[in-house]
Image (cartoon, rainbow, N blue to C red; front, side, top):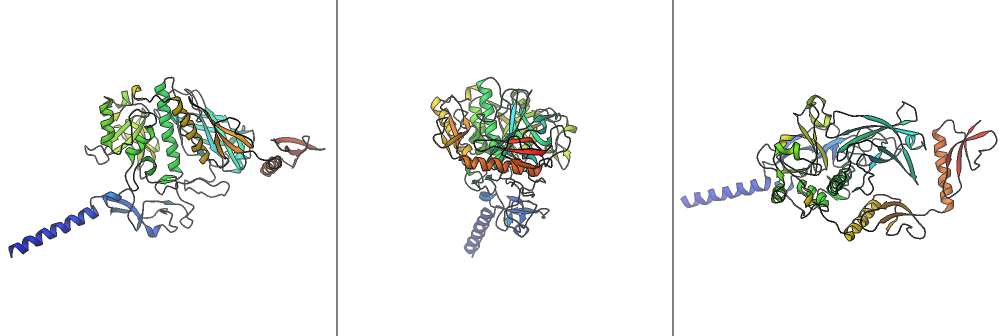
Length: 503
């Protein structure tokens, strides 16, 4: 009898152990019911009730289990093509990405400084314009730019600058430049549009754009490339291409993690790998901490203000225990006072305790995200010293130029191929250049016929004319004809067209 009781006890313990390991009841998430995701796009309707403490398996805690979705804030839960983290569709009058804006521009990011126009004292922003009221301006559009260094976000200067317009077929771009900046600083900026000399805003402005100035040394330039590569991935995440339900690569698989696997450390090491010696695909905070300790380059929390430099490694604890279980990339130590911190540094409208630091992190809700954290949330800092910078050979630099070109080409519909010659070959035109120590590469588009160019000029003129009440007609006559006066030109390889007003 005692033997039977003993066997029954052992069996019960085994059942409990299997149940615990299968459920991992201590691992829980906040989720939303599938029933509140009416269009099955993975985002519950705006205002859907949270489901707290939903049990998840430890091997699958990146997302919510079956019967739930991870996020809410779907502003139109009847249409699966409208939800957060996607691009904006031009001129449809809808808030496609649920950010409260309509037909606002998308930013154009590049993965390094070959095309980001970053110098020691300036940066440029390229935007894909989505609102005809904005891109119909040919030469008289201005931007009001609000910008700040992340090292002092309480100071937000603003400037009115001209917008350089680029029209590539049906795509329209605006480029602005901010000057008189501090070297080796991470900046963010947002943009509003105005007519020249007008205080009437045109369309909706942008969200925040993130970038960095560079510096004179090779280490400065290495750090610039690392940070810009991270910001490129931030944009990819904001457009829904990576991370949660990524349309290109889901979860952290682009960065070497397995599907459903936490990927903050993989993100940091992937971004740094081309530029930092010996760094490979590290998959844990402990591995990254060991990497920097082995280089004699790991510092305590109290040393972050004096040592921390953009691109450094930050190891964090998210459960207020001693385990450093989250990885991030250090961007800046913010000297702003508590009462002047921006919204990103507040919880329920209450500012965080200062000092705060700015980080870019992988796997923040299965996304790449910018975070403002109290400095004491960071357990230590891995400092990328100059002797860790890679010495890239000319051959490797050429291969990097080629890879950057192909990456850019994949993201731009007008790009037909990449070529190692500036002429691009018969029937093609160069549209972008990728330079470095190695061989240059060039993005090329198919050269349109003269008839196609003429038709494009005419359509551009008619579209502009429809947006401007002063325009009476479009004409191929440069003088516009008797009784008319030219007010705008639309030129190219084909026939030129001119917008005309009555005298």
